[in-house]
Image 1 (spheres, rainbow, N blue to C red):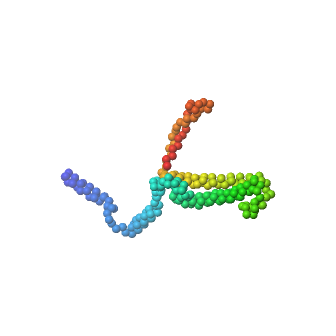
Image 2 (cartoon, helix red, strand yellow):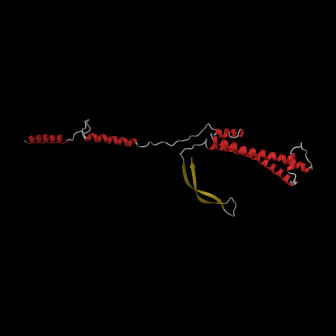
Image 3 (cartoon, rainbow, N blue to C red):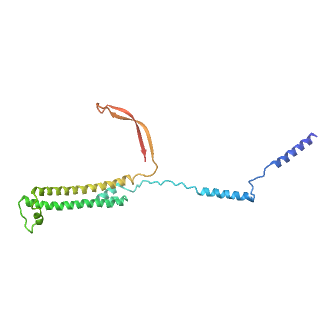
Length: 230
């Protein structure tokens, strides 16, 4: 009798367990009606949202130009003004270089011409010479006949000074454009210009000479040391 009851309970529990199991929703079944449309619309909306997400672009990194030589840039500028700027791909600086040198050259010609004129007039005045019609600067001698001798001498010295300054300015600017070519080649083409930089701040001690004592004896004050890594 007990065995029959036990077998009956086991069969009943097995049947109840089999009915209580939920169906497998992962099986490949065709979804009909509104449920299929809702699932399809949800997937489309998700795809549209994902497609509108902008792509992250990596920042452009400029690497060292190992083939660019600052020495060549300097030598080019020393030989021909503006050649170093062309070598550094700074062509927009070439009109500035030649425009400045042209103005300095014009100032030299202007002052040299009038220095030569007033030098000859000074010789006439100093030696009490009256030039003839075929002598140089005869018309100018008559034009400045009422001008005092000292004014003629001062004008001659002024034009000579300006002429010499024009020569020095021409040489100086030639050197300036050479230095400019060196700076461009050295600090633009020889180092990276990317966004990879860091800054470190560390405490340190700074030695300061004590007022009224020798420089050998120094006091130390606290400070901050800032290190930039480019």
